[in-house]
Image (cartoon, rainbow, N blue to C red; front, top):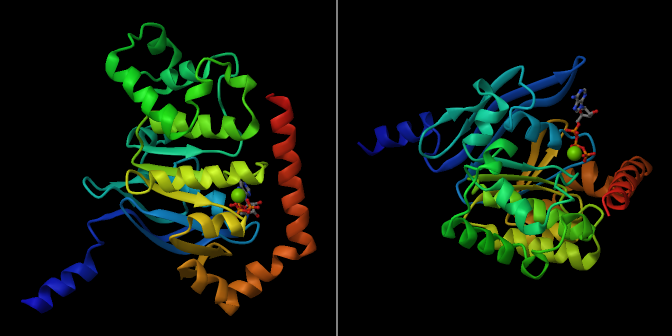
Length: 286
Ligand SMILES: Nc1ncnc2c1ncn2[C@@H]1O[C@H](COP(=O)(O)OP(=O)(O)OP(=O)(O)O)[C@@H](O)[C@H]1O
Ligand SMILES: [Mg+2]
């Protein structure tokens, strides 16, 4: 009896997995960006993904959110009803409760912080719906809860355009939270932030752990140490190593392909380019 239940658990993925990604492949112009990738994540987990530039980290998020289609493989979502995301459209995936934060904040600069959250509330999506939207006590409470979580209570009446770069990023995380996502995907949240803002971002993400499942992609090792539970190292589109941050940092393969290279010319150039983009962004939306 014991034996058969064991076999069953091998044949079927863990029912508690929020994400079960198997045999995932994606090429661009014949170049394999995602290469036989397997990735499993528990419900409520806060997972960090690191890896050299071009490892396929953002592409993985594009695949999960349905922005692009894989050549092969499955992406199963949900511990309750299983959905193969590779068969769904981007908006359908979003409706299932998957929210993504891009590096560029997409907030409404001419609206107040409060209204930005109101506009993104669950069930009120779309400008048309918002125009006829009746704000209820429940919604007000919800918005205040989010404002508290992202620490923008004091700024709720201000135009979003007047916020600092870091605060805009938090507002956007708040706008995702207002939709109460099951899974939150956050790509390089600390880019362009001051040290203090970076630390606050870490605290914010940690406070969401358990309530949502979260994938955070980052390069900043100090930030990763602050938030990291389980770290996945992606290299050439596959998982190179997975484990606790200390194990990962001590792994010679990881040091060779990633941590050692973090000071290479190639990496510095890629990071400088991204920092310049973040700066332009911060300048253009303030
Ligand atoms: N839509 C696309 N069309 C063609 N090539 C793409 C596309 N998206 C990504 N790539 C390529 O796939 C590779 C992986 O890119 P990706 O953005 O996933 O890397 P990354 O791990 O997020 O890197 P970084 O740390 O620099 O953000 C790169 O070589 C990139 O140029
Ligand atoms: Mg990227």
